[in-house]
Image (cartoon, rainbow over all chains, first blue to last red; front, side, top):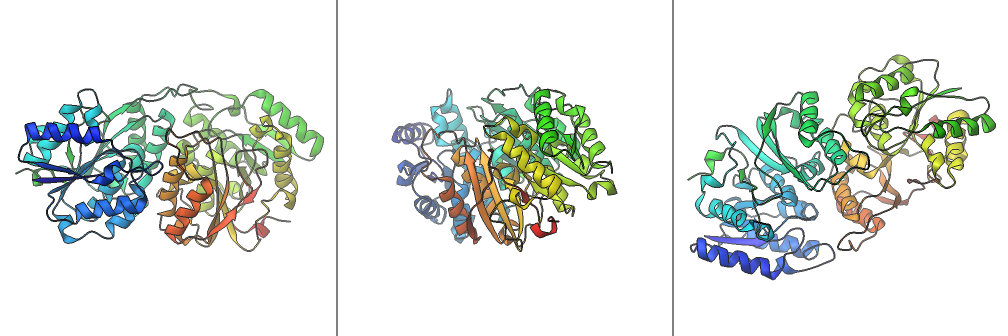
Length: 277
Length: 277
């Protein structure tokens, strides 16, 4: 089992790679984790220029010697290479697992929209820096290496198709070629560090989209580190999401166990049982 | 000439109404400006509940005794009533002028998408609080009352159709029923108080939209009060917009004289000459 790590948005430091490598060696000795050198490059805001990041992504995605492509971290920037990499994927890319969340959602969305079947939302190497981060990384590895069902978000039914996205990221890919068909899917959403009025605005955007209105329902993960509004918004994230679901005629199903934290669970896109061995 | 002012997003204070009324009385005595009482209501973040704001908007829009509906200010919230008000507009609403910018863009977009012909981006009453704000308000009134061409954005050709939007607002209405057809239009854009990575992300979103790719071109207004990134983004707003236009095959036409400031000019949606008397 070879897992290639690339950073389509912002860089990680060597200590993240070392800690993840050591943890994996101890707990999943059958897995070899290869951090592409691009993960440590720095170009302004990004882990290398767009060209460098796209090249690294394609090197791992198109190499049949890798079984999985693991996004190093979120941040911002995968949207800048999404069109380029999605247009240049070779057949080997289709066999691979993809795992990440947050900013990785642009590419995960595009892969799923293109019919890739092994795409999942879940923890990334940089999560090792969180409080309790080892558990997050081990959860991701247990999924990638052993398809361990204990890594999964507990509300996955196995019969409902599911996708999971960061609210802001999902909003910002609507109406682009990256937008996946979520008809009859449960859409799980979460966010971090967004003012509540921004989350409200994103939920307007998401629930006003005709494609999203064909979803089976919406489940809300955690919204953490919400900055205070200068005038208190007066509604919680669950009130906001319920409000927009009700207006749009989308079923609000309840909470989801995902978020920008160490407890963030794995959500395979599509039907979960297709992923389980 | 009767101008009705409503606040579909956040409230204004009485002193704004008094100053605008006094200025208008001195300079445009033929105009009567009626501030709907809803402008001063407060419900959490908003100028009254969604129901209150929608009702006020419809009272002015559907009343043939008003010649114009003037948005009191931006902020956040018109998206929450856009679907409701657009679905309940009477024939009298179609004869009216509409003027505003920033958050008002959700409703302006929806009106233009619905074929309304007298929709324009331009200064609002609350702009009177800006440095040099009297000039902004007088510019708006000169347009509403006299169709004064000196109020217009100077790059309007009279032969190219044009629309103007806040970057974030326009991004957040893509893929919703509010999205206007901008085929063969020059799209003028501006923003305020957004980190450059957010503007970059919005420009990804905007220029990746197939409808936007049919635009005749993009002109960039001012992006002001840009907060510092924790890692400097390394590109100016013009570099960001040029970058995305180039990728998307959209012509970058140059700068536009619009923005969140007292110099903000009027941009009629569609063909300018249709507005001029």
